[in-house]
Image 1 (cartoon, helix red, strand yellow):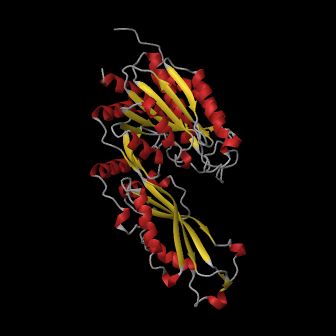
Image 2 (image 1 turned 180 degrees about the vertical axis):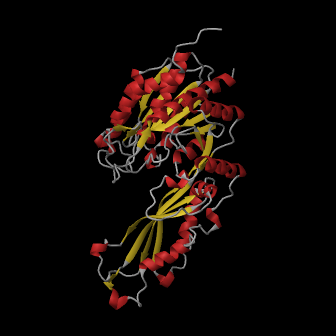
Image 3 (image 1 turned 180 degrees about the horizontal axis):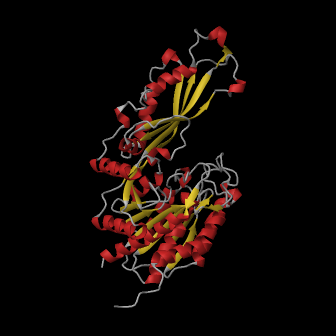
Length: 474
């Protein structure tokens, strides 16, 4: 019998590298208010996105890998991208995606925390952007470093780290066109900008819903008038808006009515929803800060999973024309504006859904009121291609090895436009979309955090999957 080895295992080495090199870099990254261009129109003059890209580039060069080439690529008037290539054997390509731009501050951070104030507490790194999705480039390089240090194989890797994702990735297509010949034809796309159902195992994202976002405007007067004089004669703009919304959803159940906004749910995704519900239990809804005795929309957990991943749902996310309660007089208001956010199934076309929504809302307005729906965003979702047997096995084995539990699969309810872009650009590729946004991590909201322990294990999983890809080609 050979003597026991005292060399640290790969996960231990990765964890040490996270503590010594990655966490300090993420602390500095969180301090940078690198808001996405949609939220910072003067982003170029302010220089925060540039600072974030240079920080990541400097860190990568400091921890340069064998066969690594790095470039900050810029196109006029567009946010930059960090592009990294790492040679590998065999010479098949894996594309790794992440982003460095951030959501805006948001109010409600608890005392001692803030969007640009990094705080480590109970194994979590608080601050804007660490989990969504600044960790990605550090995670990917650390995984490759672990493989090279251990002498394990990996294919050629191309990393594309953009700075426009939180604005809908409208700069990304131009860079895909520019860098496409250099990226080549990837066999696997690894996206690190998604979620996890818990912090106990690896989660793969199977789908993302699409989105139609726009402003419904109802006008009944050219100026406000005394409600005592006009009510009963002039129709309420709010009541008309309520009636119009009733054309879209059932007020009792919240179900979206028109068939154009629905799609057939694949049997495999129904089964995976049931499996995820069995694993997650009531954390599916208890992760949300319900007020009072508010209950979720359905009593069946699997149905809640399908509601947030495959079924269309409408939210009113903003309003205008409504004064604050303290300023509300007895006035019949001239107009009501509501911001509508309609999530659509992963396989529904965003532009088609947007045109249908506009047609429904504007047709035959009640009382002949002036009604318009102007949609500013229509995004098609994404549905993962069938997972190859080697990849399914590698993902599960990596989860068991590093977390001690099998991998799970779950759709995401949000819209990530880059996924549809990458899916169209590389239709032959396998996809693994994963991430660290788990319960209470609160991306886009106050108190966003990165679960450091989970991220360390995710990095080890990425290394194992990259190695498995190379090994199955030999």
